[in-house]
Amino acid sequence: MTAPAPAAAPDHPRFAVGVLAFCGVVVAIMQTIVVPLLPHIPELTGATPAAASWLVTVTLLTGAVFTPVLGRVGDMYGKRRVLVASLGVLVVGSVLCAISSHIGVLIAGRALQGAAIAVVPLGISILRDELPPERVLSAVALMSSTLGIGAAVGLPVAAVVIENFEWHTMFWVSGAIGLLDVALVLRFVPESPLRSRGRFDVLGALGLTAALVCLLLAVTQGGGWGWTSARTLGLLSAAVVIALVWGAYELRVRSPMVDLRVSARSAVLLTNIAALLIGFAFYANSLVTAQMVQEPKATGYGLGASLVVSGLCLLPGGVTMVALSPVSARISAKHGPRTSLALAAGIIAVGYVVRYFTSHSLWLIIAGATVVAAGTAIAYSALPALVMRGVPVSETGAANGLNTLMRSVGQAFCSATVAAVLANMTFLAAGREAPTLGAYQLVFLIAAGAALLALGVTLCLPGGRADTGAGTVGRKRRSSGRTRAVPIQEGA
Image (spheres, rainbow, N blue to C red):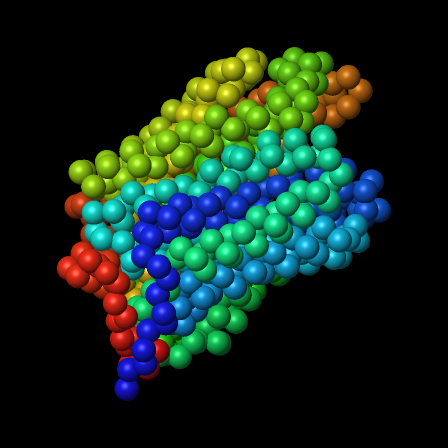
């Protein structure tokens, strides 16, 4: 028996693309917006520095857990419905952070903000379902790039707010923008009638959650606990054991949380490995740029820049990412997304080489950071096209959620690596301990190496142009000139 599709929103495809991209930028900004505030959190809240660091760690954890889970839920029960719920969670998290200075409440609010990153893969899936094939690549490229755009924009925006307003203001603003996002989505974004069959795999979701939490806790906290401590090794061991048990279960269940047989196809597996490496390579740019230019001049390489100036160093990269997402789509359409991703990985590696040799000039630092951002824009635009080429339309949300998860895991490993390098290569400058110039340069070399590894993985991918697999609604719109309800598959 088939059920009628949910009522479609008005037919405004252009507005839908813009609205979804705006939502993506907003949720991506939430991931980095507290970074400039972290040094001041102990003073403002009475919390320890270790507790304050959880304002970043918890968003990484909840984002990693909820992104693939909500992607699967969207495939089964409605992508717009789940997207609106994710934005609602963002609003609740923002309000919690805005009304309290208690570190426990702030961490809870940040956890809710992190969960909203699922908006990006859900938006990609909606665009694939709703747009005609000739528009899918450019729209998806823009949507995917919002992860990098938001990261680049978040730091300077937060710095300006912290310098000029009471710090809770940025959370009130983010809550208000989240409500605006909800209203825009309900007005301009249609609900896709495409559904995947079966029941939601609760045990699979719990197993994936447990494995991810153990892995990411060990990676993000290992530096403080000690990499050979019982807690770190215990969590890593638990992650491996849980992952093996979870994988065996997923191969037997009828409607798995993650279809491992599809994920094991070379086109999908290698794309996810490349996403992890690109996530690692990109995140180093965000982590070290602001810190490096803020180092005092007594270090011999630092510029003593203010918080606002250091944040603005990443802004040109964010603008570049917006400009390059359609360029990446055209490259993918003409030569295939593998070519785009290979080009992007090469550009990122070149950007870090530039950064290695230009660490004393503000403008050359900005230039190097912008080159890395340019490569990231092309990479983030190409990854969803590669994923969609390898999975059925009914699994787009879950597959893009998994790919986004791999980027987050790469960022977590990058954060741990950068922290370890900067903490272990130090010297005394003006009476304080600071990372050496060689520490920053080593980070650039490691990030360049990750980009080159991504290039090697990409070259192993099967070639061909992107098969976007535009959804039924998009084809119906072109044939009839209007949107009609499409029956949901039986069992949805």
